[in-house]
Image 1 (cartoon, helix red, strand yellow):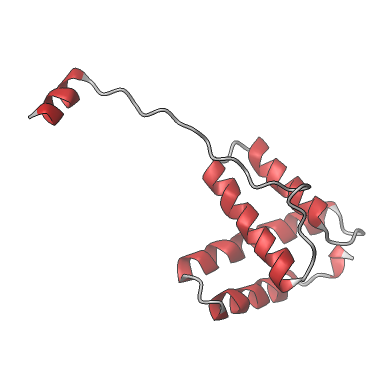
Image 2 (cartoon, rainbow, N blue to C red):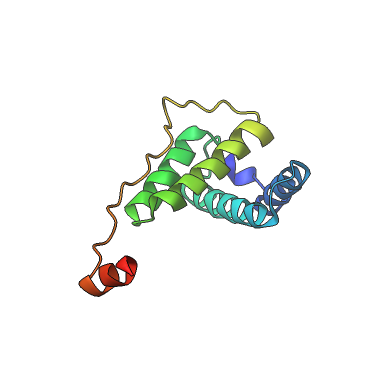
Length: 120
């Protein structure tokens, strides 16, 4: 059951795994922060359930509804996928949980002054 998960122990085990896998220190901190938030939210919402990919999907959808950017959600996705696949050895179905598509943002329009600066 999810309520039996010790968040701090899970985050520490994940930190050790990522460190041994030679991830950048900034990535380790970010992934651990994401995992901690995910586990705390999941324990609060589904205490009597078994942890599974549906919880990760629910978390990512919540982040999307909060208006988070594609890049933020993609980092969340990567962190949770690695946690499920590598640390827990749980299956991760790409059909059930596709990676978010990158937002296509048009470049801003340059002012006449900016165009003039580029020309010279």
